[in-house]
Image (cartoon, rainbow, N blue to C red; front, side, top):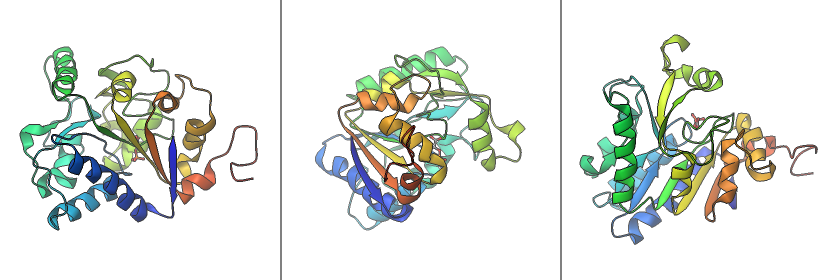
Length: 251
Ligand code: PGA
């Protein structure tokens, strides 16, 4: 794993956008795996800026998002479709037909899940998957205990995840209980992975990725089985990462 420690989230965004744009410039039909949440917001702003300055075009890019809440329509401002339109798609020259996010309102969820996997395959797989990480070590919405061999599936969200995401909703009762998420096996099939970790509260999750035993209780440890992972980590997260059983990683 490559790890790059940066001072703050603005620098993280510049570095992450650079890596994503490199794929978009070198691949004829780039396929990006995208993530939502607080961490990648500045990266999307950076990409929008670069696109508006003519440094990069999304014309030939196809995207697949990691996950979507079950039960939220695209028009709901907490849906991940809404997030992507608002943060990225509305501001760049991407063809909407090439943007994919699981449909949390699908009547036949099983069919939706199968179709999603099929679409990724038909696009030739994901060239670069952008990832955040949960404080509990989840990637996508693969919560602790998710088998490493899962493909796209429906998952019951951990209470800790619902609590972490309640900041976007009027109350925790409104946070959906389930989501559709790409599975760990589907994520690991991406040719390259770009993991962003920001803030002191992610320190423990970072330590697990770097030093923890690879285990299903901490889904992100599965990333150590991938040959091409780049991590961009801010100082706050890095300083808070403790090697299990030791003072801290910098001692
Ligand atoms: P965050 O979420 O970027 O909002 O912290 C990351 C995640 O839960 O995967």
